[in-house]
Image (cartoon, rainbow, N blue to C red; front, side):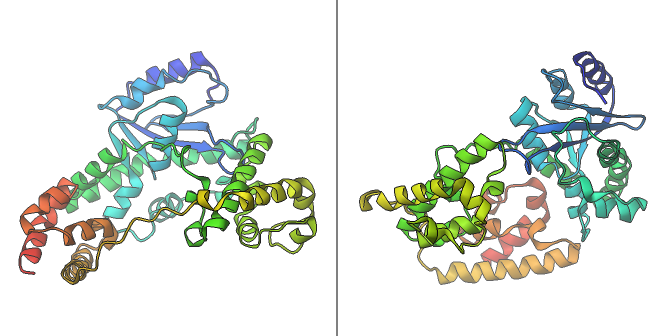
Length: 368
């Protein structure tokens, strides 16, 4: 367990001499208002190390290692990790290999790490710490053991997957997907209304949206003050009810699902004020959920899309892949809109897809 700057520098120098590094991280998104990375795990063929970013002010010595294209970094389900490393520390990852993507391209039915390690190594990961508060210190011996287990078998796992992908001619597919994944980043949505990310908001009428936005702002302020995730301050079900019913009196809060007596005592007055602000908003200023206008119905496009989905089903079945892994719906819709089959390669985003089925799609579209 590394908790000092000098220890980090020594670890970074050591990792910089490795050809392969298995990596993982633990965060605290279920326990605090602003999530943060609370632990970093690294394994090589010879040793494992845990790094405490809460105890070390400057993680910049790790940046050159993680960005070194000569060192392969092995993650499982890397999307969240890549975003978090860049958000919290400005760390970018190069030469990524995501074992979850590899499992998907091998047609594995269960791609979670616990299921994969149990199947291949007979190891059962203890899941009780998946939702633990990793910002708490000291970490228990059991939590430390759990953290180490997440990476110790990843290199062996990577070796098996690489051989199987190579045998199927799919290693380049996974490497291309991982190359794209390296560039994902946390997207700032500070300028957007909070209701944009609220499930069910798209079905609400403008006045309910105005009330919901005020309620969400109030909940967000409370969550920041208490340093708790917003959903632990007031649940979404309660906010939906409040936005629809728009209570005016304390007695109106009784019976609303998710609003216990304790919650009403703590924030009931604030909720009623938020509802009142939303109700007072002038009609001309009421928000509306942004919808992307639907294109006019095009029977030819619909027929092409139907044909493409049928083709995908057969192709994926022959390859023993999930259809969405082979080609997602957005790609099929874009292909169905093409004015001519010759433009297929400009729409298919990945080289492996163009090589695998570009000609098939061109022929299908040309014939229809």
